[in-house]
Image (cartoon, rainbow, N blue to C red; front, side, top):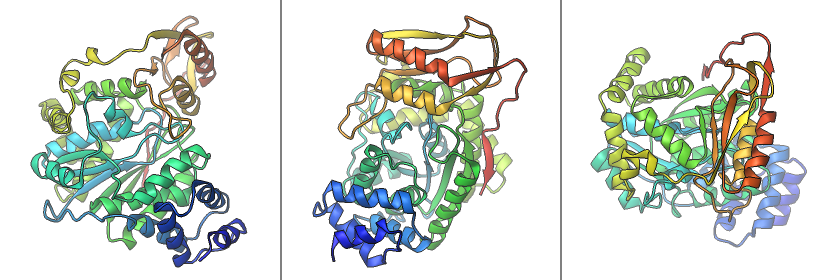
Amino acid sequence: MDILKILDKKREGKELEKKEIEFFVENYTNGTIPDYQAAALIMAICINGMTADEILSLTMAMANSGDILDLKDISKNIVDKHSTGGVGDKVTIILAPIIASLGIPVAKMSGRGLGITGGTADKLESIPGYNVNLSIEEFKKNVKDIKISLISQTLNLAPADKKIYALRDTISCAKSVPLIASSIMSKKIAAGANHIVLDVTCGSGAFMKTKAEAKNLAKMMNLIGEWSKRETKCIITSMDEPLGYAVGNNLEIIEAVKALKGDMPEDIKEVVLTLGAYMIRLAKKGDNIVENKEKILKVINNGKAFKKFKELVEKQGGDISYIEDIEKFEKAKYIMPVLSEKSGFVEKLDANIVGQVSVDLGAGRKQKEDIIDNAVGITLVKKISDEVKKGDILAYVHASTPEKATEAVENMQKAYKFTSKKVKKPNTILEVV
């Protein structure tokens, strides 16, 4: 089989056969097909799309490119949660310990940052000593011992997706329904969970810009779940403004710690309660969504969720003194306020601009080999519907140099739009699919 013929075929918008997709996945994974040819095919897919059959073939080929975990010896009901990405999205770090503290096993592999969206693995690594690169045996043992493990994709679980995922980030192919759906579901299938709750984000700070696009992606992932015999539920959430108030690795871990102690921004709370309630339902631990939300609030209020997070961090080599005292986290050298140039009410806070500012500061990657600066980022003070007077602080930028701080402040000004009339806070949960 010839990769050039496959490239020609997809460039012309034709449907690839299952064996052609399997040939590409196998040979890109083993290094026979170089990055530049893989990039050409990924770009052709991004432009021309894929049929449902192609997406299923790609998903299964990536899932089968490495090991498929069997977690039945741990529990018949392993639940997983995944987000399609967003700005300030630290939900996994908050929600996974909550679910585990309820006695429900959580075995989760998380990705790194992609485009303007932060990665859970990167955020966890900002905790000194936290090891996201466990062996499969260690991963399973942790789930058995403490009901939870959060790791990065390992070399032998969906390795094809790991390579394609990193490549997509550097060739502006992050936004593609076939690539997003196959990437997410191949990881979920490989990771062994049989129940999956998916947070499908939409808005300026997400890959899917509209609810219609998000719904299309949700339906495709539900279909893949049905084909692969994984019970799947998709929750469409808004990402028109960042989730919570912190953007950047150290800053988001700090916000997650506060949330697990009960100090949780309302938009994060809405997402955590909704996704968590469906995770409990899929795990067969409670069918009533309202009652499930009450269970979540109870383990936050009684400290069990925070205790479980500390247990997770310690089990994976992290220094829990940072969790117990968040002041220990490294701070950026330059912290500069973003002052409002107008009075009124915040009508828009563009998550896409905020995400790009955070990447420019060094909180994300522009190239695969870029090293993330855990200390930099943005803390928001004002969000949509908040009243602002001229000269009020809208946000703070956390930067490594005064030049980057000044540039970030200027760009953050562009993220805010004001109106003279009070506006409603936007809904965070848009639809359950």
